Length: 439
Image 1 (cartoon, rainbow, N blue to C red):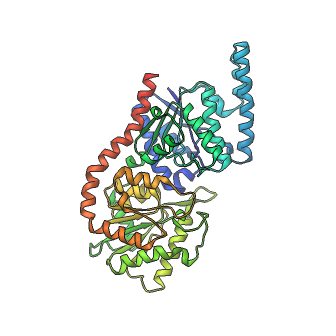
Image 2: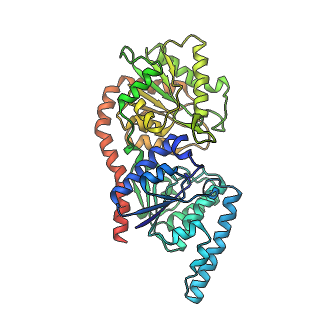
Image 3: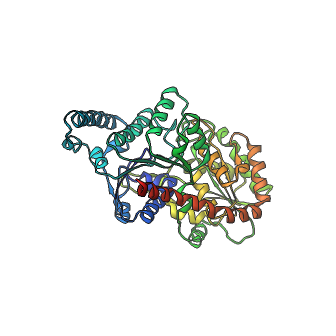
């Protein structure tokens, strides 16, 4: 069985694995899940994974700027593919011949044509989060697969919202062409039903990231010690993950931030340090990739450094720490496993905690386009009462206080709930297997 994996999550080489760590916590279990349920499959992908990753999982990566730039190169190739597949269809219908040589000139079309199944993995980008060119490319690739008579599954996504008229109409058309859609949280399912996607096509599952295996918790503890964080149990350890999306003003990657933009978060952190007597550890769940492919501090880390030095200069440095190292997804999860409480503005940072039964409060996005997935994940797990509004420091404080007061109860609840969520995560791959067997 030959599977082609496409999707708008594609970014330049190294980005999927080492920049936005949340992407990698999905991608690795996605590969393992397909490998487990369909062991005889061969996977080709346009998502730009490293040679090491491809070798590890036996996959073939289509290379080219077309698959991640969503700029001129992408538009030119896609327009060319429209003509190629158009002529191919005309020859097939009128002359009943398969002019496959036309499609071989396109890396994407030639691979899709020889595939048994096409899987789209676009995460939360298939909606208003995508640039217009990116959205059109994502739709075009799915429609190409359907014109080539290939079954298409949209796997483990959080599509939507679709506020503009043209996106809504195009999304409805594309989703109703797809054979199966698995959404990783229930809010996305509601959004698709609202725009008229057929209910029979949709299954609500859970994110593969719940299955991601980090390094051992003890390894994370060693990192914390090296970073100067005491692990004596004298004070509760509270991890805080923030990102540019939590800030009150766009763009998400703007740094440095004005002091007033950070005031809500500073208020919560000083409350934890002072009134709650905690040790607070600021950590990034996002890096940037240098030209040589190595990891470096990203914009999230710069925001956290601003908060750290701002509070340290005001006398809050004794129990406030910032992780200065640059860590990958597996080591980040090991670090998070040592926290008593986690407050996360990155959803897959939150999942790294929740999947280890760490009582977690999720911070919503602070500016448009808002991400409904945060509410969806919180609802799926059953912790929506701890979803915080970043523009309201008192709301964050009230919900964090409630989480801390019920931390034992929440941990016990998660110990029962997370195994159920992991089963739902695995159901993504079982659905793929069942779909293919029936087909």
